[in-house]
Each structure stands twice: as C-alpha cells, then as structure tokens.
Amino acid sequence: MSISVNPPPHIVLPESLSKDASVRTYFRHLDRMLLQLWRRTGGETDAIDNTISDVTAGGARSARNAAKIHALEKFSFDVEVITTSYTTYKNQIIICDNASSIDVTLDTLAIEGDQVHIKRNNAEVVVKGTIDGLTDKTINVQYYSMHLVFNGTDWNEI
Image (cartoon, rainbow, N blue to C red):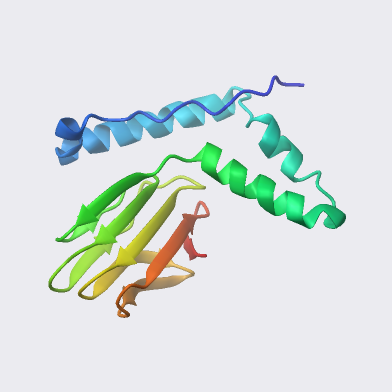
C-alpha cells in the first residue's frame, strides 16, 4: 500500500525564459521526466482523486462537484493571448486575438491528461494535431472555444 501524496508541482518558467523555444523545450522535457519518475516510484494522486471512483450513482451531484474540485486542484493553466501562430505546451488557455488566419499546433510531447482550451475571438484558427482521430480542425465560428484533453495517443475534444 502506497502513501497518498499530491502530484509533484510543474516547473514554472519565468516569462523571460519561456520565450526562448529551446529553453522552454528543455524544461518541458525535464518536467515530464520528473512526473514519469514520480509515477514509477509509486506516486498516487490525492484523497479526492482516490474517492471520486467510489461515489455511487445515487451521489451523482456529489460526483460532479468532486470532479470539478478535483479538476481545479489538479491543473494550473497558463493563459496566453496570441496574435500569431503558436505551439501549445502543458495545460494552457489560449485566447486567439488574431486579425488573420493562424495555426495553433498542439504539443507533440504532451502526456496523458494535458489539457488545452482554445478560444477564437477574431479571425479563423486552424488547430494542428490529431483530434478525435482526425488531422487538424478549424475553428471558423467567432467566439467559439475548444476544450482538448490528451489521452496518451491523441487529443479529444470535450
């Protein structure tokens, strides 16, 4: 029986370092290696995560509320407002304020459970990556938002 502990925190880069693609990639790899090491050495999630699956059908409202609380505790999202093409990393909220069509490329180094929210404010946004088994998806409706979760193989739109 292992001891329940919270997942290790993600490495947060200062904004000045996160602008350098090679530094950002290096720390993204380092962060994933630490998470994988934590999982391989018996790391488990916190008590809320362990009890969500124990909630019965009669407690559906409790299950929904516990899941919402769990989602807020488990992830911290970086918010990015972009005007040009961009590549995502980890858990992000992307606000697209572009005047002409842009591409948002999904993280090719994502790990299971990573989430990305993409909101289109102005011009068309093409989301590049495998989403629900298909290649690329275009957000062609103004103010539409897309919530994506990585399942270990490809991205799923929620």
